[in-house]
Image (tube, rainbow, N blue to C red; front, side):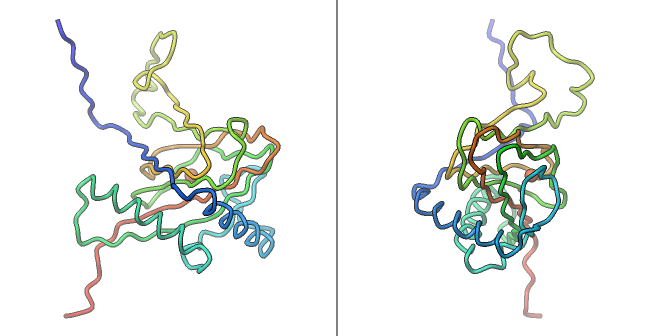
Length: 203
Ligand SMILES: [Fe+2]
């Protein structure tokens, strides 16, 4: 007797690793640190003990390359999910610098189709993992008596950050980042992407 599991309503987290990550990250790290020097206060959001920039990297020339890659990756993902062709992707991005002891509390990103993070610099695995909460809220009504959680029975799943890897997920997926237990800053760039109908200039 063959029992076949069928995947309904899967939650996808896409990742991609950039080939030129070493040189690319060296430039980004320098720019991220320069940004913090210009605005040492940053903004308070979900970061605990960390520094976060305003979410306007998309307007800054020195971050044009990462902005372009965010849009390219999300465009590919949108196409894979049959998004309409006449859409424009708009992004917002910001820098996170999380020193030892810093973490990000659980949150989600409203009003966007995709959210994600790109890891610029970290000391894995002590720097802490990104974790995702089970979005199947009804599943919280009953836990499974298992020895070892699977992707089906888990209530939270972790992914280990990797320098040079971008993670993209639906904005509604609750997530957080564990405490940085390493002795180095964890530096990342987070983003939101919204697909909007193209505005025609002709009448
Ligand atoms: Fe987030």
